[in-house]
Image 1: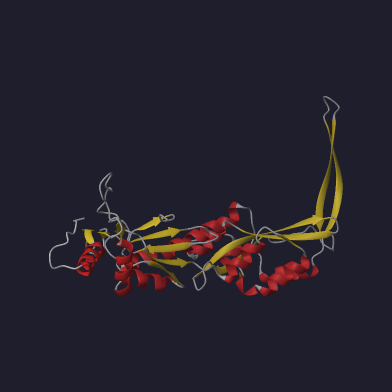
Image 2: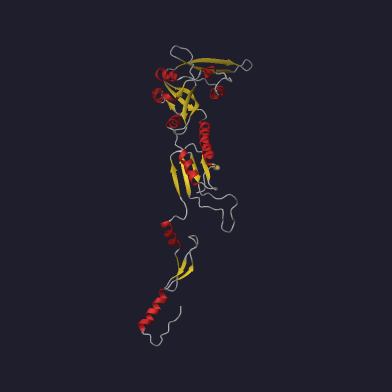
Length: 325
């Protein structure tokens, strides 16, 4: 700071005014370069340096955002496609997370550019990845209801209430499925269900059979003693053979598979799935168990169909997994 000398003709007031003027001046050390570089100035009081970068950026953001940012939460797949087509660039991508509990599809409009990143210097391919849209696939009420009871034990009344409440989801087997014969004249889905039943030694039943069992099903158990003797050693093996019979004393012959037709996602296409039907006798009580056969495969097919629709409609690459935080 320059010293101020008192000259002839100047009074003390003038000298003080000149001194205060010099002390109050500030000097720009580094100017803000298009909103990207720092803005540094020297201030009075020992000429300290003050960083005004953030304040300048806040002022610029007040009139016009420096970049796009935020995450849109969308309610259907068509909205995500429209959003992606509106904001996509050459670097934009999709991320598909196929978790059965929370399937999700994410579009990142400002994704990193293709190619290797810079190791030391500023990376020209890097982007902020702050402009996104997310579609959380809503599972259908039918899918949630059947998955909830899949593999769980139910008594007769619980089974009856569930079947009556969800009777619209149960499909009676076609004549081709009842015949259990694969033919070229069958529908592809019929042959697929026939193969499934053959693999697990199943037999498809009808809705009225389930309703009848839930109302009048009784199991009578008989035990026969079987003895086998080894003539060489004289050792004997004793077995009790249990057999379940109906009220008339005839062996039980009940179907162990049913067909349900339900969508995986809300508003989505329905899928035909086999459900294994079993019962278990525990004393005087009978427990019923219905288990969806291989639901993961159906879920994957429905999810892949939706993701393929999005990739074809947007022309964007799709990664399986979760994007960078």
